[in-house]
Image (cartoon, rainbow, N blue to C red; front, side):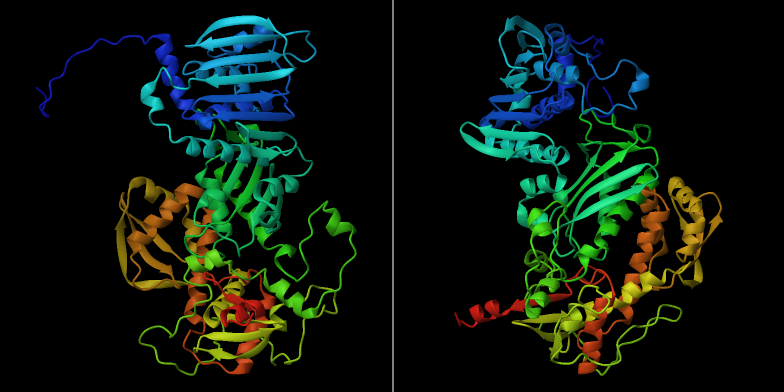
Length: 632
């Protein structure tokens, strides 16, 4: 008897039956009907298909048919493709690191055939006749000549029939169908030059004809309205090319499922890339909200390992710091680009309506409204963050309104650029003399202050309510960020603290020593397991627990490296400084102070939220106001 009370029975080690071994291996690749579609469609793309058609029955549980117009296969190749470890993609281990295809045709078919019935109709391009193969239980049951079109058609039925334990874990047909359509949309984003069609019986689920440009495919997949809200991303750095699209900060979602990074044309789940993208939106979105980003990274095969996971949904980078930094800078550059400022409507490259049509006369009042749309948080994001059109009725509990002016920035930072006089009440939004886009905030007419915390402005046929604390906080934050000091001020601890850490955490912190000093830390080695903390960034609360702080920093360093992560940490510190010095809700302001603050929003980027991601303003047009008071 063992200590747990269970008797052990010695069993001899046996070599598994080949079919059982294949079915176990197939489980690593074929998890559900969407896995079958993924493998077969990727094979079709590797075969040079220009058009791919998918037909489903019962969400793929009963039948999956994938038809392509690619190169097709000869009889011999078709038979070999159904064997384990058979592929046309590489012949030696040296080619593994530089492989540029999406998958291994033989590996996919062998895995699928071990858990389903597979019928293959294929004809090699230029051949007089094709081949029909039937594979069941991992073995070829039939192989005969057949008159079929050029290309390949593969039908999969009886999925997991021989593995009932796995079949019972499949979801409803609607759920499985949803997974398939979602994956097809993702691969369609990566391959706009290929047409994708998916149907369930007579019902069309997806139809994306081939197009020439990525923005056209984006409109097909996301719809015209959402695609119009995306900013183009273009970036090259040290052998890494990044392109794609990123949503404006005014648009956000409750989940990260709309963040879609692709490496080598393959959608991947990668924490490094996700973190870089989310860091680019730091201080632009409410907490718990996520952007929509479609990003394609072209990285040399020597710098990325795509064989980390059997389904190739995960990757490993040889230089993770380089990839993280390039991705962060690519998205930030898009968010800081000209598309984020000014009142002119977006113009997409190649859009005939935008390029060829003469400009229409625009009423200045309409131009104000159009410009402000770039800064207004969408209603779904506002609700999620407690914003929207519901204003709090009082300031923070326990505070009494007090007279307070807009305080200057801390010594050593960029001075305030607040104008010295308010805008005339009659001012409308006109192009500037230097040809730059109009300034939407400067055209607002300040009416007054509501609830000692919200600046009420008029524009054209509507009202704008600006959170005075969020606005001042954003202005101060951008000034601090623009100052870009070489180092962050430190505050020395009255009593140095000895912190014991895990060996790997301690090593990471010591390796990043110089960067941590610039970030405001002062650390010393203490024995073999501990560090002495003598100073922390001055912007942090004096009650900050050094152990928790260092553990978080060490975890961040492990995930994304040193330099860029600390740059994001500096943003967090700047946000904290900006918050502490900004005017509060509950502080009464004079009209000229409010006007100066509103106008200063035109001098900074990213004016849609406070540094913590809370909405900066809401906009009420005349139609909405009249609907609420019943005047229709």
